[in-house]
Length: 437
Image (cartoon, rainbow, N blue to C red):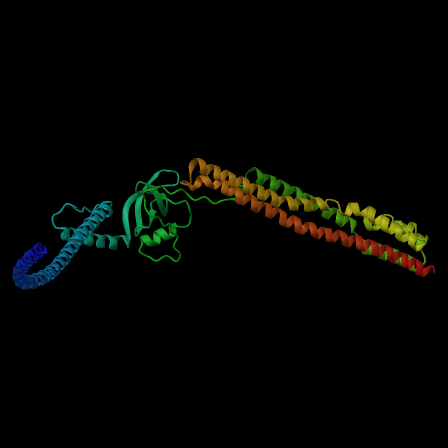
């Protein structure tokens, strides 16, 4: 038992000793850690203060940099603006130089043909421009006036005539010589030729004598480089020729239709001749009761009306319905002669504009074929097809309108003759019935 107590005591003593040692160790460690904590806190405080100072300095430096950057940016923009102005000024100088050079070149080219020399390589461009402007002003005053010069021009037969040239500015000229005088036209290469239109000699001599003509016959031209063709008066034959084959066909139909109109007029005149005279003769015989003598009285008369009245008198003693049928039958028989050529004339009037339209189509086809081969550079190449297209239409209308108008008028005339024949025949029947009732 004692042994156990000793063991327990020993263990307790050892445990107590170890606990004291552990407590002392902890205290030492705590003291050490606390000292380290205090040191770290001081160090942290110092570092924060240092860091705050550095941040402040950095912010201040950044602010200075930003201010400096803004200042530099403004300076840069000002410099760029100055550079842009300088470039614009340089461009203006360059453009003005190019314009001046261009004006000088144009002046040289324009004035060179009038014998005025301009030196485009001169050092002083201003002096060159002044010379060009002064020369142009003098030339303008010269060209805007009427002036007389000695020179030559070609006559209509190609011979050369020497004499006075009256130049009206730079747009017209007149020639006066012992051979011929009148308005001049360009002959090419700066030469003149006498214009073929008559009546300008008086204007030429009046201008030569510095007088104002009552009527100015003038030929205005642009320049003397290109030869101007003589103007020829276009005749009716030239116009018809422009219509081509179809144009001649239309004219042929028109002539044929005109012939039919003339024949139809002759037939209608013969058919309606002496209508009133025949009616008066027959009426006078019937009123005195001489119906048999009426037929003999008109036996020698010609025409549709006479034939219808004679047929009526031959059957005058029949009943009225039979007589009326005979009258209508004879009028129908005469209608074929009265209506002769009438329908055919109207057909020609309808066909003529269709042929004109056909000529228009063929002319346009010809024009487009020429355009396909030669292009549109020379209008003269296209004139043939266009002329055919327009002339055939015109000829078709010229033929159709008179044929249609006259054809309808003659048809109305024929209807009037038929009505007069019927009226005369019925009048004869009425008179016979009245005096033989």
